[in-house]
Image (cartoon, rainbow, N blue to C red):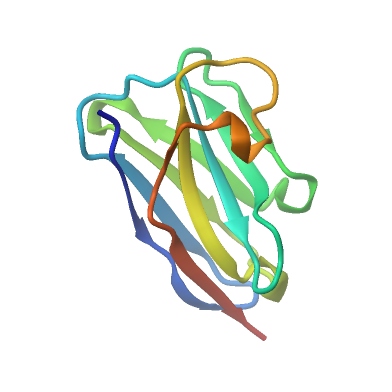
Length: 125
């Protein structure tokens, strides 16, 4: 059973950095793709980034390209989202997600079967 536990997040000033971690508290990753989504206040959940655990391919939403980096450490069953040059519009609840297969639609929440509890990220000006 996949159990995703998120840590990190918190409060940062614009231009600062934060790192989110997502650990599979169950057993070693049995999924193929991992993703990060976020839900800004009053808005729908949106795609941020994804990584294929089999190929290492990474994907980013345009607004975070060059600022956010997704990575994994399979030995520790953990996926990270390093967020640099934060902007106030990055304020959101961030969710870790996992799915059992790779392929298209990595940017669609409905394609993921497992979710973390969410972590608040607040960026102040």
